[in-house]
Length: 191
Image (tube, helix red, strand yellow):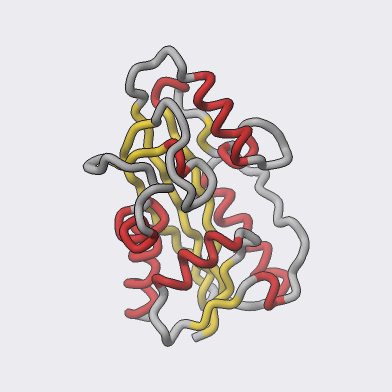
């Protein structure tokens, strides 16, 4: 089965390719010839994921899935949430985003947070959503060099290292995206 992953994020593509069964051929937007920036104008992760999946299905007539992920921090009333990628500005600078989070949390001792990923699948004229969540805390500074986004400042519950310090195999097993992908894969295997 050929399936498009509607993302321009090379790190996400790498993570997803490691998890998908070999009989599912993952097609990137680059492979498809789609170079435009897909809009993320909705107010929820679910709606943004669906918007991106619909964008590809409508323009290319191909089965695809898209995700949207947010870091939800309790002490910031759920921020950055749906605005995680652009928390510090439209340029989507991960370092600036992390610095803004750390600055806003400097007086909070152990800020609880969660990552949430929603995957929207468009397959055979069906639209299905899959969700993955992982609880954790935000650190006081960045740790680790692996991963991307907020990984250097997020320690998942039950661990003492950030996502940026954990091996990718472990991160993929426990992460929000990994959990949502496992639900997607289970669905694809049945259909």
